[in-house]
Length: 469
Image (cartoon, rainbow, N blue to C red; front, side, top):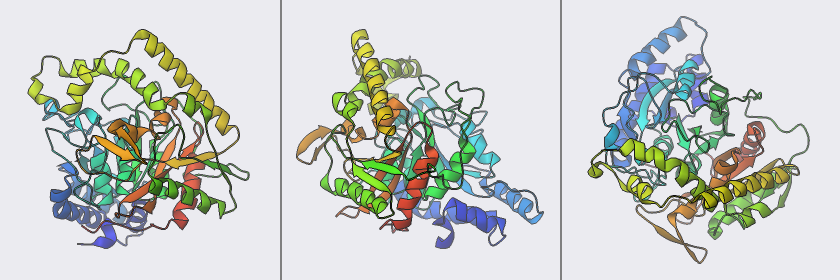
């Protein structure tokens, strides 16, 4: 098995293919072999694309013929199983959609293919993309490649596990409250939830509501995230939220054109945080300070006034419950797993609570706007703890007992406000599990957070580490 290939990042693979040092067929076969070797233990891949090798052979012909090549020509990519892929099973982690084969690709998939990337496989998720663990009645539970007894997160947990384990160099996930950033943190990879509307959600369930949903790239390097985002961004004429034409520099972002100002915080306003995680955030801040960036500890009063997780829950139950009801109407309850049943059983949000939550969401947006009038970025934790054991429902974090929803405390504010956030590894727990930090930017400031993340990546104490499966 060629470890030199399956642990290369997508940018390196594209360069090797472009310079004819390796063929797209060799790259694809290396990843297929890796899947055969480790997926039985990890259970991240749920469906292989039947034509992956034949498409790789066509990509090889294009290289040898001297055709113009896309920036990801011949590079395999994987896709979360809630994102439509033409002719390839997209079952959303539910028996209700068993055997479903979409007729067309999601916009994000089309754009990856237009860049020359080749669909390799679909990855596991919780039922309907709706929990912080990737487990369902259709394709079972995904495991963390760093410790198979722990979760790779959710809802893009299969995607994060596949990339961390070398089964895929790059892929697509979705994020409602945590779902590309949390799994990245639990498996030590990199991911980005861009500004809301920067990447169209066309071809991803649910069609409505979409105001908190995002699709985002997941990979093992910051430069891969920048490269993928450059292909994915922009309106498609179908998703009304995707209207931004703000330019983007794909060369791993760019600075603000002046000395950068960065704040860091782990609370208050996010809930309790494990001391190891808090120390990693501080270490990342110190690493930026050592590179002559102005860095200081900060607070955002709006987060203390309105707990974003409570605001999100009041708004989202009101909006999402009808989508669950429509999808499950008239179906056998035995076909439903934990979260569909939980969502359907939740009491409706009262109109008064809904209106108050809408007003709180506006206060949160205003609070971040005030913050970003003084700073270019914010460094926080992604998760308050490293990856946990399967099935945990309560946690004691820094002396406080909380339920599992609190793991979203630092990620969900960016879904409520729509701001961009990037998750990247910068530490390791005493038990050997990855710890990521989150780089948060102002509205449509992906260039800035990618630049800052690249500075952190260059000095990361954990760069180049991979699980030993």
